[in-house]
Each structure stands twice: as structure tokens, then as C-alpha cells.
Amino acid sequence: MGERPFSRCGTLADSRCAGERGGCFQLKASGVIGERKTDIKFTEHEKAIIVRKIQRYFTGELRQEIGRFDAEFLLDFFSREIGSCFYSRGLYDARGRLSSKLDDLAEAICALERPIEFRNDVGAYAM
Image (spheres, rainbow, N blue to C red):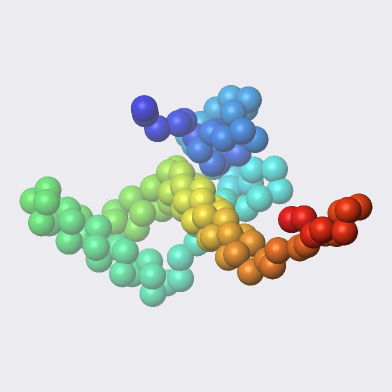
């Protein structure tokens, strides 16, 4: 069974999003979907680290030199154009993990319950 497509709301299609058309590539580049902000902003320090990684990748894997300006431009492009897909996938995965943990917690609470005995009309106790 293949992956479900991204919905317009930015998450993988689920029961709340299945009826919506679109995909992560239709997310608005302006960074606003409804009232939610989707721009991915990095600090200058984070950006410098990522730019160096891009430069190392180009040198090591593609055998091409890429300058700092071009690497920053590429980072900005990927952040703007597909960053929302990664961000939304992270939220989708986090929601799944949280849901699983809440299920575990609910089971643990149920395990703490004590049996309740009710007296029936005949005077005997029933469960």
C-alpha cells in the first residue's frame, strides 16, 4: 500500500483532509495557509551551518564547487518551496506518536480501576 498524498492543509490525507484537493506543492509560497504560518526561519548560526553542509555536499557528492551565496539561495528555495512538506510531515508524525502515547496512558489508567460490586435484589453481590 503506497503513501497517502499530502492534503491542502499540509498533512497527509486523513479523515479530516481526505476531501480536500491539492498537495504540498500547492501550499502558498507566502507562508500563510488559513491563519497558520508555514515559513521556516533559521537563525544566522543555523543558516551558516546548513550552508556549509550544502557546500560540502556539492563538493563531495557532485564534485562541484558552490559559493556561499549560491548555497544560501538554494537553501532559501528549498525552505520556501518544499520546507512546508517536511514541517507538515514532522507534525503528522508527532501527532501519531502523541496519539500512541495517549493510548498507552489511557490503558494504564484503566489498569488502575478497581472492580465495583453491585448488590442485586436477592442479596448476593454481582459484578
